Image 1 (cartoon, rainbow, N blue to C red):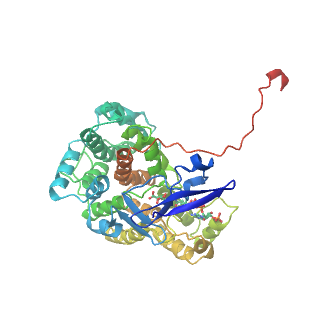
Image 2: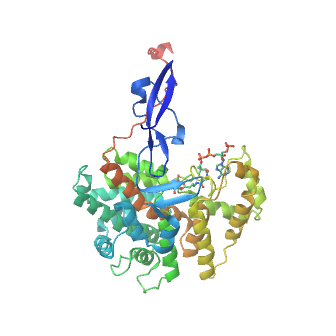
Image 3: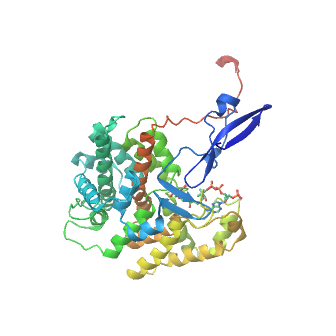
Length: 428
Ligand code: SDX
């Protein structure tokens, strides 16, 4: 006998099915609620509402658990590579040596972008935010690959569109950075692996070959893996709902990039560094800024802290914090904002306001410190988040299409004026 939930409204009782996931999460299936009761549910921010069933990423906010296709994030961050994790998220299993090599070779065939796309780069003001450029450039890919507009592509064509996007994203990201410096762009090199190729396009020069430190490439793999997916977060939900209208992959990912830009979401990694710099320039008094974060009359929030789902440590933040120490030590960098970040964390974890609200450091709290140590400017941090999240967005979009999910169209409770008649202008 399957579990049901009872709801009574207007003197009538209704039984609704309860579904249980593979990790024993339970959900009340309300897909027939309005038909049987005439009522809908209301849940601003969808804090209690599941939008879909998904087999991609599992996270337990209470326990601080994160797994991609069942594999713990700690193991993947330590042992895997970003392209292997991308394959895992998109196709569901770890690749074999042969399938990974085939995946890598296919991607290396598509790393160039159409030369006409350079005109887009030239059109942006030099100081325009990289996230706005990235959203525009990714959306523009559909202009060069019109076959991607087919809402019902063959599996082969869908995979080709996926490969092209995975292949071209590092080129687009690195060229955005080069253009911001007024430097000539560096073209992709097929003899380099995905992350090394990206770092070479970003920090290389046409005037000389440069050696990218192996520890820097390794740190970048780890950061990209840690950002690769996170179930139904704001930007992923955006990708799924845009894709549910049969919009093409490039348009769906472009929308996800825009959602990620917000400082409450992916934009927090930039906001954290700006916050830490402000605190340092203000004399480094973390107690003063914690007090501001707790003050309801002060709009200041402790960026990089708190999470909609994690009510325990964000497992990614733990790994990134350790990587921070390792990378800065290896590169011989002493960044004063790291000490301020650690002081803020230590003080907040003992502060009743943060303890009561279960506010812990999230993925964005330490990531910017590493990105800065690797040589990236602050306004590129969220673009790096998008580069990491791309395989997760693609996997979620692919799953939504494969499940033939209906177009996303939430209902509402209307609270505006009831019916009233038009009043001619001269009588108002
Ligand atoms: C990401 O969803 C994902 O998975 C996202 C992400 C991913 O991988 O995709 O993990 C990536 O977006 C991480 C989050 C990055 N954002 C920030 O670091 C911005 C700072 N954090 C917050 O603004 C906030 O914590 C959110 C947006 C992350 C979560 O907000 P919620 O779940 O809507 O919680 P809330 O705003 O209702 O806060 C609950 C309480 C409130 O106080 P009360 O009204 O109960 O008194 O906690 C307070 C908030 O004021 N609070 C904070 C705080 N975060 C929450 N107070 C001070 N500083 C903070 N950072």
